Image (cartoon, rainbow, N blue to C red):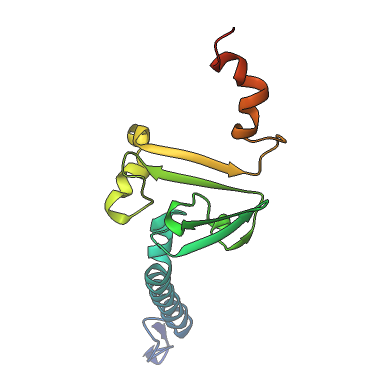
Length: 152
């Protein structure tokens, strides 16, 4: 209000308490936060189970892997790395099994796979093609025969 010769006269009789610009910005911010909250909730439900597995698999589906001339079949939950859980030709396969059960990953045994203090209850195996020309049966004769038979 300002005084002049004619008395007090209101410059802005109806000035808004909150500007329109502020309302638009506040409303937009609330809508963006609500959309982000909905997106996080949806992605959490969609991918949460997969993330909680941390690379493990509970699937007992049989995976057929060919290494060299050998065809092997393993349950998917015994194969250690996700990229190896595909049927077909492979150079090697890495397995992990519970000892002494010799079973793969399951949600009931999750702690034994995730806790380093319990790692003694796991057996890690790597199966690959033989690099030697003879397997153990072929090496018995030339290498071990002298040790196994008494000298005459």
